[in-house]
Length: 618
Image (cartoon, rainbow, N blue to C red; front, top):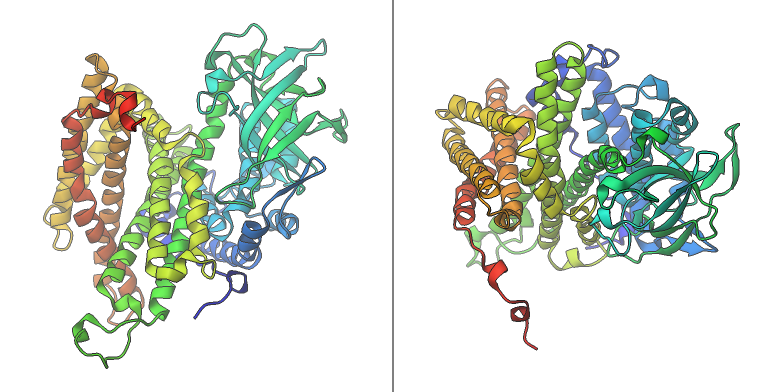
């Protein structure tokens, strides 16, 4: 019945859904052939996605179990990554898939961000631990290429973007956790304009490895005399190995690994404690030069947004492959008789996909996975459309960028929370074997838990949403979002297939709008302590409205497409599946949004009122 996990390649991908979202629902073709995407066509994108899926499946997916079993080891101060990672890294950069959306200046192909996003989903579905290394490098490259001096751009970016050097993001410290303003890492100016860096950073993803010849650490530190809190932090470029003026590598830069964490999942990714300047010889330079001191948090947020979207795509990738493996298992595993023959002891055993509760679980996973994918693509296509409109239509740029800002906490927080639950459900579909290492879903579940903690815990995302994003542009970004949903509801309330569900969405949209006003009233009415009590629930409500809207939008399109197909066409079943997923999500998830609004409106303060000693007896 089972095979050892290492004996199979568990990677699976739903390319048909990719093409539906890109070219049918979100109409990416409207901006292809226009700068900066004038070198891309629909056929080229299809080919690229198909070839990338093949590479990720053949080269990276088989290493997923290897990485989980071997983990990373600290040997003589150097992290050793699992077998095969170094060779796979080299091949990954040779294929160009990680740099496919980069500008030609950096050797990229200038693909739309939507294409890069789907490749990111795929590579994480194949091997999320491995992908932490190139993803962090890409984030460093993006930040330095955007905010660095011209000299920094030329010194660091070609080597990072080519895969020659890796990268990390170093914020967290042992005493600070998520309270970055408590950072103690020091930066002391040297006579030559460089800075001596000293301090310890904790939980640094991909903090060290034996894959690249150098690692570029982006380190938040406080220059002596700087203000307290986050306003006094500066972002420094700190190479693991110093770089000579001619670009060659010099001596080690006094960056050492204190510990590699033993974790629940993503064991192939080295999560490190890094010590900077233990021997007083760690040198860094401010991103953007001397004139950018004390701007570290603003600079880091640029990388954080990249990382938060990336975390949502990590979560989606693992959730999607968990669902597809559960689906395959349900089609193949025979157990029990059909409910129609439940009294007949001699009835044949049927594939478990025929059992009602298994079908419910599969449809629940399908709806959530495809809804999260739609949310992610909606966000990145806003990015693509903003780039096309840049310099030509300021109003369009403001609209698209405003929606990106609003959706980032949704894809990160809701996406990562849902991914863990989807993986949990995938184990349930497998039954007892799902809890064993004979099948991959137990690893997917372990790997996925970190995503709700990465890049600011999900409560931080919720507070970012209600504390910052709702009020951006004078609240206009949120008004526009609610208006877009309302426009869809008005146009589809009488639809022959999704009409009732569109009305459910309308009720949810109104509940979300009312709750938005309640948050504003709490902020202005001296009841700010109520905000963090309900911020997570509000983010969940908004995410469910958004996902429900996008699924129903896809279902309305699928209905029209399905009608136009001849009987027996293979896309008949695909479109029927899109409709079923949307109806299920609207009836079972979107329908709960008004209830959540009612719960928020009750202003339950029990968590504030219970005495500390009341949580447990002495």
